[in-house]
Structure formats: C-alpha cells, structure tokens
Image 1 (tube, rainbow, N blue to C red):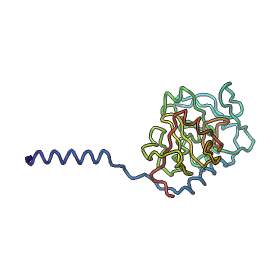
Image 2: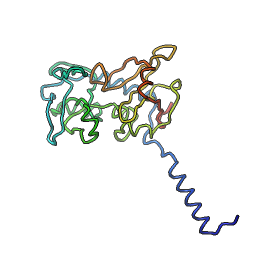
Image 3: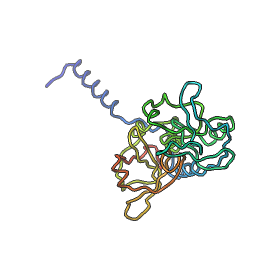
Image 4: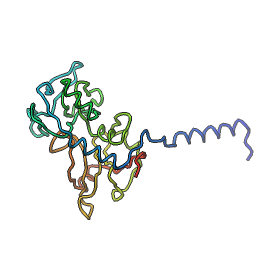
Length: 236
C-alpha cells in the first residue's frame, strides 16, 4: 500500500504524539537511600519546646479551622494530642498540608505559629483549601516529598507518578507504601525473617500526631489497598 505525503505526515504526527504521551519525564530530584533514611530519622528525633503561642484551636484569618495536637486536644475516639507548652518534646508534629523543613519549623515556632494541625474528615474533603498558612509541621506526603528532596509537596495522588510499582518482597529502605488520596509511609526494613511485619516511618497515624517509626503488619496494610512504589530518582 502506498501512502500520500499528507497521509504519511499524519501518521508520523500521531506516532510522535503517542511517544510524547507515554514517555516518562525525568525525576525532579535525586536522593540516595542513605540520605533519605538519615532525614527520616532527623524528623522523628527533632527536639523542640512549644509555648502557649503555638497552641491554636479555632479558625485562621481565612476561616480555615486549626487544631494543634497539644495535650488539650482530646476529641474522643480519635488520636489525642500530646505536647505541652514549656515542655521539651520530640518529633515534628503532623500538619494537614504541611511541608516544613526542620529550620522552617523552628522559625515558625519562634514566630508564634501553630505547632501542627490535625486532619479531619472535613479537611480531607476540602483538600488544599483546608490547608492553613498559620501553622508549621509536616503531613504524610509532605514528609515523603522532603525525604526525596522534591521541589514541592506531592500528594498521595501524585507520588505514584514519580515512581514505578514494585513487588512487596523487593522493598528497600526509602521506598514507599501508598494509598491514593489517603496515606503514605516510608519503608525502613523488615521486622522479621518471614516478612510478615515491616518497619515504617510515617506521620498522622496512631498513637500520636507526629513523625514516628514503628512495626506494622503487612497483611493489614495490603487489606487497606496499599501498593509498593520506588521513586525513579532514588539512587542505591
């Protein structure tokens, strides 16, 4: 079959468009597994002393509700707060939409900003419009974004687009487990030889509203729909 020149050009344009659509863009950052894990631990072990100025329960200047996870926050049936003004504590607090570096968090405390902001069903339904500009802290995807040295905070909806899906038994420190539009956590290692439990870093989960590291049952995570992902900018 012989094609005319216009027909050939149309075919080439279609092929080029398809290649452009399917090609993977280069990752926006590079990070080693060691760097990632060192930073994860730094967020978990960061020491800070809040003041009364860092307590906030009410709306900000734009009408966004803020509830800091201090010891007065105890909604019943949900994760209670823990930190107390004037007492040193550790672990960067959870903030819905938070993307603070450690220095930004400390500076925000000194400026009297709210230390964290817990999530609620209302915040989850409103997404970015429920993020306050009057608090400092980190949320689950903001945490991963910092650990991967990303230029901005990527949501749990966006993170898989920077990754390739992997088998659970192929997980290495620095990889993540993610559920779309819900939660993500950082894989740190296996907690047993059978790979029935893993150790993860995360924030915004029991038992407290802060960055922590703990052991989690793998079957339970799979039952919730978590998938294993490896960042394309991760360097072994």
